[in-house]
Amino acid sequence: QLSTGDLEVERRHQEYPQLRAFLKLLLSLARAHAAASLPLPAGFSTCLLSERPASLCSVFAVHAGFGYATEGERWDVASCCLSLFLQLLEAYDPSSDPSHELCGAPPPTTPAEATAWLLSTRAAPAEQGHWEWVSGAGGGGG
Image: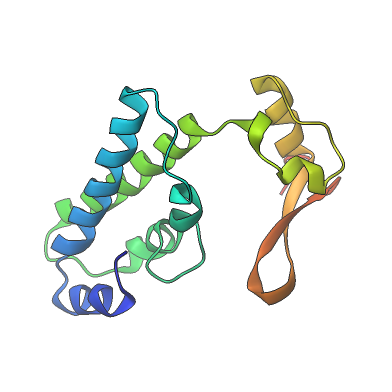
C-alpha cells in the first residue's frame, strides 16, 4: 500500500514515480488474474476502493489538483487509475455481491438486471464514515 506520507512527498516535488509504479503494479496484477481467468485476490477491490487518502478512489478524485512537473505524468496517473477501475468492473460479478441483500432484492443474473439494480439504488452515508446501498433512491437522475 502506498502511504499518505509518500504521496505528500511526491506532491511537493510534483513528480509521482512511486504512485505511478504502484498503480502499474496493481494494474499488472489485475490483468494477470484476468488473463488466467482467475478472480482478483480477496480484498483487492475493497482495498482499492476504500476511503483512505492513498486509495485508488481518493487518488483519482484529487489527481487533477496535483501539481505536475510534466503534463504527460498527469495523464499517466489518470490513465492508470481509469484502467484499474475498468479491470475492477470487468472482474465484478453482480450475482456474488451481497450488497443487493441490503436492498431486499434478489441478486441480478444478467447485465441488464445489474444495471437496473444499480439505477434503483444509491450510496448513502452509514455509521463511522462508511457507505451502504439503500433501495429506491436512485433512478439515474443524480
